[in-house]
Every structure is written in C-alpha cells, then in structure tokens.
Amino acid sequence: MGQICFFNTAKAWGGGEKWHFEISNYLYEKGHDVFVIAHKESELLKRLMKAEIPCKGIAISNLSFLNPFKYFNLISFFRKSNIDTIVMNLSRDVKIAGPSAQKSGVKRIIYRRGSAIPIKNTLLNRYYFKHIVTEILANSFATKNTVTQNNDTLFPKEKITVIYNGIHTQSITDIDVRKENKDFTIINLGRLEYQKNQKFLIHLAARLKERKIPFKLIIGGEGSLRKELEKLIVELNVQGHVSLEGFIERPLEFINRADVFVLPSFWEGFGYVLAEAALCHKPIVAFDVSSNPELILDDATGYLVEVNDLNTFADKIIDLYQDYELRKKMGEKGCDHIKTNFDKDVQLKKIEDYLVYG
Image 1 (cartoon, helix red, strand yellow):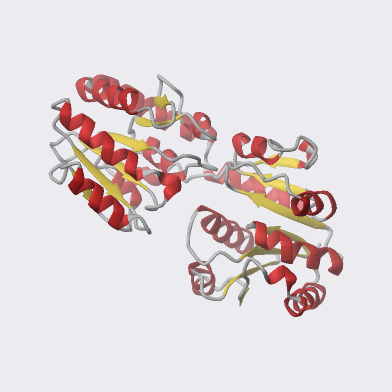
Image 2 (image 1 turned 30 degrees about the vertical axis):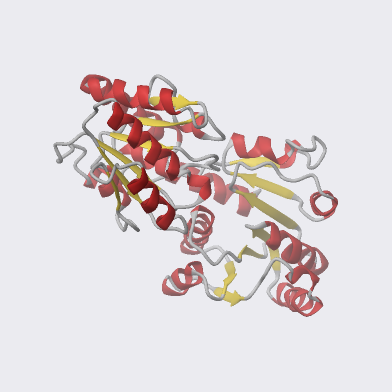
C-alpha cells in the first residue's frame, strides 16, 4: 500500500485540525506510512513538527486552484511520494489537492466532512463531487445528510461513510466529578464566533436575572466577537453574572465547574465539547440542530430546544436549577451514553480499517 496523505490548509486550530492531527499521529504510531500537508503558518503544522510526524508546510488560499504553479508542484510531490490515499479537509483543499491527486494517479481521494452545513449546489461543486472526489468521510449522520441536502444526486450516498469523532472516555477518571463552587454555574465553551452564538447566552443571562435566578454564566474561548460580547454584557447589565474567561487550556477541568453545560451553536459537525460535558456528568441544554441529537438524548441526558427559543431555554435551565436529583440523573445517563457510543479507541480502529484496509 502507498502512503496516506492528510491535506489540511486551515491556519486556525479547530475540530477538523484536531482530527487530522490525532488520526495522523495514531496511524503513524501504528507504523503506517503517513504524511501531512498543512498551512505553513498553522497551529496544526507546529503540533505535527513537535510530534515528529512527517509533514510539510505550504501556503494555500481560496484562489490557489487557479494557480498552475501550485497545481503542478502538488502533482510532482504526490507522484514522488507514492501517495495512494489523500484525505482533504476544506473545500479549497478539494479544489487544489483533489485534481492534483487525480492527475498523479492517487486512487482514493477522500473529502473528510466535519461540518453539518449543506453543500452548495454550484457548477464547481457538481464537477468536483462527480469527477474528483471518490469518497466522503463524515463525522455524524447529520453531516452525511447535509452533503446531498441541496442536490440529491450530488454524490452517491453509499460512498459516504460515517465514523464519529471519538473521545477518550476514561479521560474523566483523573477529574473529580464533584463540583466545588457553591453558586449555580452555567458553563459554555467554544470559539467566540457567529457559529457558536454566544450572544444568545448573554440574552439568556438577562432573562434568568429577570426571573430572579441566582447564577453564574462562564464562557470559555476566544474569537473575533469578544468585544461585541463584552459590550452586550454591559448593555444588558449582567456584568455580575457573566464572565468571559478566554482560551481554556484544560477543558475538562473547566467544564467540571458547571452545574449545567449549554451550547447554543447554530450548527455542529460533531460536538466534542458536548461529549466532554457528558463525561463530566453534566446535564446539557442545546439547540436541536445537526448532530446534537446524536450526542444528547432529549429529556434523558439533557434538553434539546428550538434555535433561539430564549423562553424555553431559560425554562429548562430553571428546571435543572430547581432539581439537583434531575441534574445528577441526567449527568449519569449522559456519561453512560458517551462511553457506550463514542469511545475513541473504537472509533480510531474504525478509521484505521477505513483508511488502511478499506
């Protein structure tokens, strides 16, 4: 078998980059021939180099597929490296790496889809998904369904494989699941970006304050919306209730401070943070979107609420505030659900079988 090449040119670090790093590292440690191409200024490349995983940094933009120099450089590299399988991350990666791989004779051209956003039914997309991409690897059934949502014939459904992003289900054993702080604490963790919708949480805080609920809302993460969120906190006069704690180095320890974990994202491919919260025995309130129902069992391990339904969201938080036993019961069921269905060792073996022996 030839080499497996992972191709991810995102500069920022996110779920997709974490996946590419962890999978390439796992396969490399198992003795498989892997190579990773990442953006030369990315956090992914830094981590790959630190882990001594074979890798290369390049500069790719959204218009690089129009640059014949970059195109022929990739063709030359793929041919010299005996690439048999390529796994791509972004739509721009598909546009430049996909045709280059095909021209080089790469047999398996896989688009790893990690976001439950419908693929646009454009002329370019119809070309790439009909003539270039040979397989799609999705991280949830919700993500799989969005591939053909705008065009039922965009890509053969039988060539879309679902393998969940696994999580080390024993990772919580080093964290004391008992909550130390006395205040009723609501925790959110995610990038401060539009997708994650933390503005909703500031309005939630105002609603809970109106209803005389004593609480603390702690939001972890950094991003471009920090100043807007800080301004909104002041405007809604919830400074005493809401804090933005910035980038979180130890997510499990941070989440463990919660009584309830909340996630108002507009979409998620696979919500790592939901699995982490469940492992911490936390009940979860989130929107009923994308893959969330695969991770949260409504009325059993938490609550799923319609998008931006502030009143219902607040009601569910208050229900959990008023009932400690309910919080405990949901937390225990949530932990069991994640351990049963999303164990990382099981998912890594599935990915190894898919990429190496598939």
